[in-house]
Image 1 (cartoon, rainbow, N blue to C red):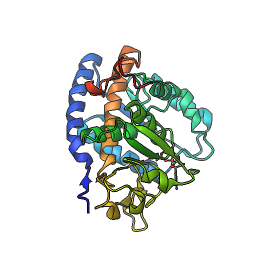
Image 2 (tube, rainbow, N blue to C red):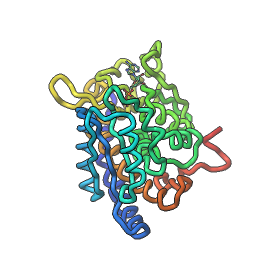
Image 3 (cartoon, rainbow, N blue to C red):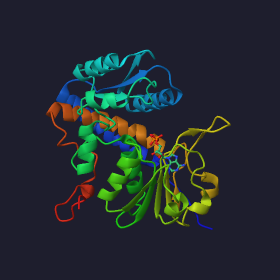
Image 4 (spheres, rainbow, N blue to C red):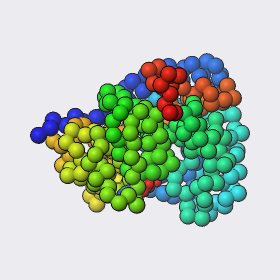
Length: 309
Ligand code: ADP
């Protein structure tokens, strides 16, 4: 029986809050005004509102203003475009997050073309996503960036290790896979049409799950001693929040596991806060080229061993 290590976000959160306090003071000194994150919600949506509530709690704690912008469900594409442009042009607003999912009649891709890359705190615009995949400094999606930081915080070895990522969304699975290959892991990216998910998970030293499917990864699928990073946030039939992994049965099998809630979640909202500050610096400088302050020195790409090769 393995003594499974519980990877709690709270341990890293303390360090992130300290980093945020320092960066915030520096930004205010340079910029002359306090940073503000605007989250835009169209209509009513349970998961989007729950995520916004968690942003509220985190931002209150780190003392960064979080402004709620609301549009009715009936908002048209051109009205949404105009609302995003207005936030782009509003000097008071440092970062912008459009809460997903949008009502069915609105194409989420619309946002991608209209959001300013310098205010794009979740790294979803083609500019930030492209820069991430090219290994250039960028604003990176908070969930995978936080997940990677959690693995680093607990000294999980990535170089040369086999990692299976489940889920290929543009905000979690796919960027997570990219970040991991840049850290020299050998990555398998699984999705709904993967033929033998259990087999792909079984080979992995590290399993990252972002599928939105409770109980998807069971104890018999995981190699004893493997690390399990669970990004899933699902509401169970009892109304509690559960992840995508069968947490209880993985205790004693996994080498380490993130609990849900309390694992990756607290880190995501803090990385969003830090991204808001990074967006503030990027806007001041008019470029994304220096958005590297969230990478520890040892992780900066070196010329001899390029993460792009
Ligand atoms: P998120 O925003 O958390 O990444 P999405 O709903 O956008 O969530 O994406 C879910 C991803 O998970 C998709 O890429 C989908 O292919 C993958 N996925 C969902 N269910 C399964 C499953 N049963 N097996 C493998 N992959 C799955």
